[in-house]
Length: 410
Image (cartoon, rainbow, N blue to C red):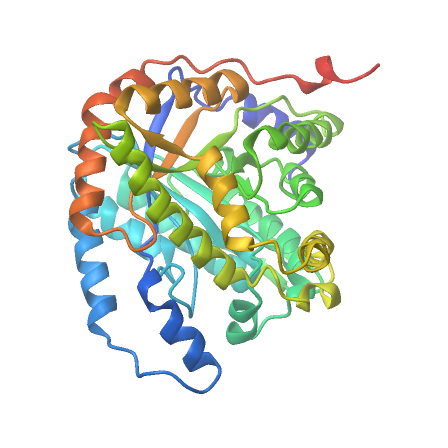
């Protein structure tokens, strides 16, 4: 495996992003199907109408192919299985299609859930994606551990093994991309004298753009220990992530690695009229919130028996102790409404500049369609944002990475 010194050198050689980049994340949610899906999961409900999946995929692909022409810098997607939360079971396959259908735009995963995959296959897939993009475009690959019990169960993996599988998978992927021949022996993966083919165009460039998204404070250090860049997909108030990022940096400091800028994710709704923007946000953001709560079953008591997910167990217990007066969808929706970006173009610019000042991100990844939002509403919001907001954000210089040690007690 590569040494910490090599990690430090490679990170310092990463091409510096001078101004903030702005991408669009594809979710392909089918939130309208949740009631039917949950009833079917319990053995009842109506049969699935496959046209709702076909319609959503067709519409979202049509919108995705406009993103490059609108001036955005990147297209991202996610990985989920089984449920209607998002319908992208193979994020690299979708990005490979995007790569072939576009000329300029970069692509990224938000995220590949490594415990669900053989790491050699992941290394092969992202290598092929790099070939599809060519030398002038960059795959920005985000990794995560996963937190939806139904997905682990249906795919046949134990959630209690996710941390160990994640750690081993990252190590194998790095070896496959940088070593012509390698061996690896772990608890879950064992291989001898492996040469991955084809060799990547630039394996180190892939590694230098690896990101990590976490759901619990304790998990922040997991990605940092592998030299990954932080990717914030908010599940709590944004300002609370400073504590996570401070822990992230401490781990990197211990490995002799320099501070790095995060990437940050938002849901967005933009309208010329402030009242209309708020009205729409208060419809679709709670729909997204309900979908997330359904997918991760955050109120369930199953986390207490799963190693590595103690934070979720504590949160579920706190919600239970709060009693029936607390509506989890309403409570989380209010937090999401406070976190995410909605309003007139000027309001969106102001909110994003505030976040940029607070975190010095190198990139924003924006979901423009979520919940039960119809295509015409999403397209109108996206085009207005691209015309009025995007140029202003793309002019913001990326600040130096925040050195949290300077803010910590001596």
